[in-house]
Image (tube, rainbow, N blue to C red):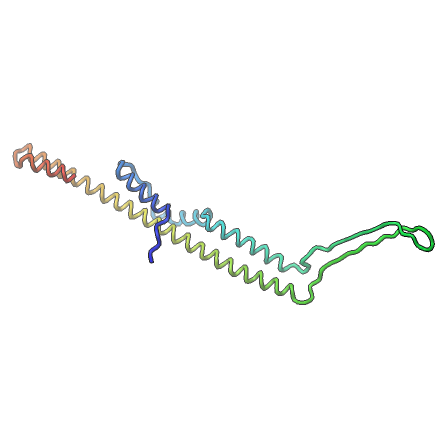
Length: 187
């Protein structure tokens, strides 16, 4: 099923129609600019920006999964006075805790991060394919619009020439005024 035209394609076609109506030049990129347009879209298309952001998050998750110690150590300290049989004394307690994964959690985290990275890479490639398809399609639509505009200008010049020929023939007495009016009506 054909996909509907995106808003940018509709705007480009509308611009072509307005340019034709106002005799304004339509700016359409040359064939050599397609690669430049693709590079620009790869850097600035919203779909590519979002895909790269997801890729950066997956990359960070991969780095985090590779850490040997997944959490920071915790250090606690307590001190205070305590009564004992010998009298009052100062008591000090320092505790250092570090979580150590011994049941394969690190390997599972690495596997999950690797799968996430693969999925996000596939999404990035799919986003690029979609953006590339859109840019190439819009580029071809612009080329077609330019060709249609050129053709319309050629037809208009030809019809103007026909009016001039009909007027000259009428001035020479070869044909009547009706031929000139018909030529102007076709214009």
